[in-house]
Length: 114
Image 1: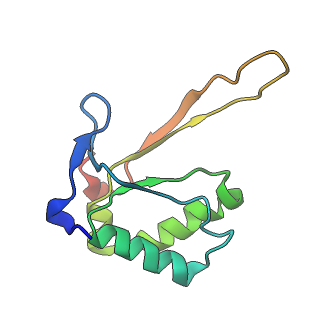
Image 2 (image 1 turned 60 degrees about the vertical axis):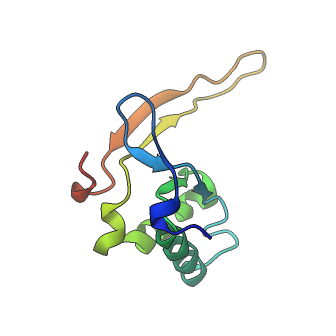
Image 3 (image 1 turned 90 degrees about the vertical axis):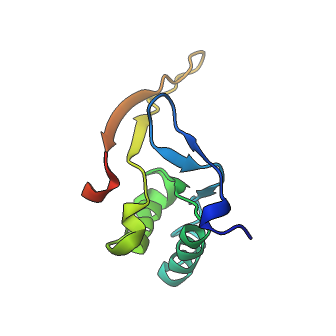
């Protein structure tokens, strides 16, 4: 496994934060994984240099985001995470496409540098 120094990072969008080219999906946090398992996975990801976490408030009815937040609360780990952002997908009706609309963009912590 690569260590933090070996994991490539790329700029997210134009002028965005540097994120790892490998991300971690969190859709099973809270559904198939409890606090202990999530903490172990997140710690390992951060130790390996991963700072890109794919999460959504619909994963486990929001439990995924709560567990991820608890796993990175305080300490050195929070300083390595880029700001988070999201979009509201909207309502899809027959014959139409849902149109994503940005709804928030907040720093993951004051120490994120955003």
